[in-house]
Length: 184
Ligand code: G4P
Image (cartoon, rainbow, N blue to C red; front, side, top):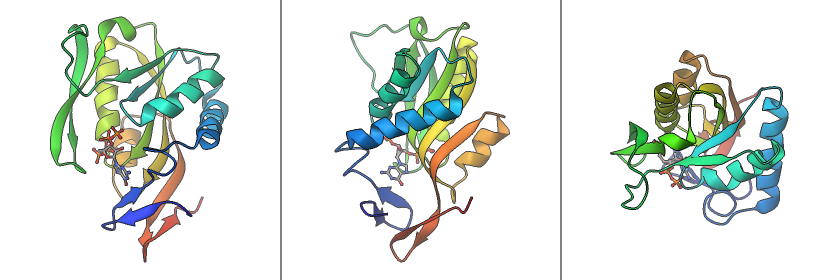
C-alpha cells in the first residue's frame, strides 16, 4: 500500500522491496508464511523461475529444513547441461515468448515440488513449470504466489489444473492509482 507504484492501470511496481531492492525482513516473513500454509505436505524441492523468485524461494526452503531450491532458467547457457526439460512461455506483459528449462538432474519422479513466484498475472510462467513437472513425472504439491492480480486469469488457469494455489496478496484492481485488495 505504501511503496507499490501503479503503472498503466495493470502493473504494480514493487522494486523498492521485492524485485530490485529486497526487504529481507519481508522476504523472511514470506518464507515463513508459505511454510506455515504448506508444511503438512511432503515437499522435497522449491522451484521458481529466475530472477525475482529466487530470493524468497531461499527463505521458503530454509523453513522447510534447507531443502534445495531450483530456479528454471530463461536464458540459454553455453556451459550448462543441455539435457533439460523445457516449456515455452508467452509473456503478455512483455509480449514475447521465451523458453523455461530445468536440467533433468534437478527434477525427477521422486520429487514433490512447491512452485514459488512473485507475480501471478495470466499464469503462463506457472503453466510452463507445471508442464516441466509433468515431463519429469514430479508431483506438484502447490503453488505459492506473493502478489496475485486477481483481475487477470492466472488463478483460473491454475485452479483448472487442480493445484493448491496460495497467494499472499490478492489484488482486485487499481483505483485512482491505489491498490484494492480482494476481500477474503
Ligand atoms: P504470467 O506468467 O502470470 O502470465 O505473467 P506475465 O507473463 O505477464 O509476466 C511476465 C513478467 O512480468 C514476470 O516477471 C512477472 O513476474 C512480471 N509481472 C507481471 N505482472 C507484474 C506486475 O504487475 N508488476 C511487476 N513488477 N511485474 C509483473 P519476469 O519477466 O519473469 O521478471 P523477473 O522475475 O526476471 O524479474
